[in-house]
Length: 526
Ligand SMILES: NC(=O)c1ccc[n+]([C@@H]2O[C@H](COP(=O)([O-])OP(=O)(O)OC[C@H]3O[C@@H](n4cnc5c(N)ncnc54)[C@H](O)[C@@H]3O)[C@@H](O)[C@H]2O)c1
Ligand SMILES: O=C(O)CC[C@@H](O)C(=O)O
Image (cartoon, rainbow, N blue to C red; front, side, top):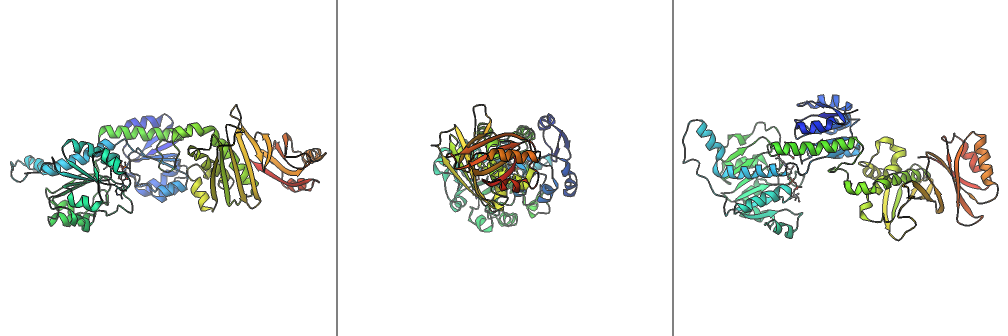
């Protein structure tokens, strides 16, 4: 049975789903060294934002197939390291959208009315109604940085509260912003005009310290800024200075440059700042949503099924995959075959998607072909996640072409590889019953199902050659299961495809090439 490690607190609904297919160990608050020590036992790791999944942890996770982040941000996972090791990383892109948006809105209203400090004063037995005179958000301008899922929900609610909406997001269209009721502007204009600014962007090299001293200086003195996205998007030192000097009126932070928040001058600031301990996703609804969403994906991957929200498998949409499933095996088999025919070091792979496969949706077949091609070198280490990156690093150039006019079969795949043994090509299709057939080898038409051990020859089509080859193999105790010849013209060049019961013993290939009329011979294991 598979083993799953849950290293952050996860709702029981997720644990119940994982338990259907795996032994689940919940071990929270592990130190990095403790995690490194035990991770090698596990097939899957499920986390929230508390666990930092570093390269060292990933490298120690030699059995890991999947890392599931119960939440949106995967910035606490070294995704490139996981990809390199063929580990699928999944998240829950929508499970906590509403929770995070409502937290940002709660922060905005709390900041405007000093709710946290007013509450604390009453609890201290005070009755101070002068200190906490606030501001209304009605008819004020809200600047939304990042108009994705959370930013859009914030916009919808803020609009209903009568706010004017500006948005900065270089990756969405003016039309989309207008649909949401936002005017798309550049960041400088947003900073200059907004009374409230709320950040809903990922943390990337471009967004790190996006809000720095220079940009804080552009904001209005009555402006308040909210960060419920990721720590480090605001420069905390610059923010503390801007608040202390009254350059801006307030800030509310849920996320920090380093979490948990350590020594920080932000704590010394009074009612102008609200600090929450990364609570954006902390509603019972969101925790159930993300736990179920991610646990289902871990379960599916452990059962050999695709994940619906993998962040490191480009383009593998589950519906499309379901349609392509029968062809994935075909692509992989052809990749394995052509890789061995072309010799170990392949430098060019041309994948032609033919007939009804000639659509953009078939791109995963290219990944499957690469996986097959690399199998000889990498064995189980290559998978759909890392095949493309491994191919790139090995200098394999991949060309993808489409030809809808090929109608021999509903859909067929043609692979051509150039390697140390020259350029070779194979074509394959699925026959009516879904069985894989090789339909062409090096330009010669054949119709043969692939088998585990095969021998291919290139020879002159002449009387007696099949018999000679049969006797030769027989003399070495090699049993032929099936044999087929493909030729273009009678007595011209031809290929022979033989399925044999066991691997071809060493040294026999050279004997085969000595048979008069045989020009070349190859043996492959599929
Ligand atoms: N505090 C929490 O607990 C909590 C909970 C959920 C999500 N989050 C964080 O909230 C953020 C937003 O999440 P989401 O689900 O809305 O993501 P999303 O992907 O739906 O939206 C992000 C938006 O940011 C935009 N963007 C990217 N780079 C940008 C840049 N340089 N400048 C301006 N816009 C840019 C994108 O175009 C996109 O529209 C993420 O960082 C996520 O990790 C935090
Ligand atoms: O795990 C959490 O509670 C935080 C999640 C949140 O930051 C996210 O990116 O989804």
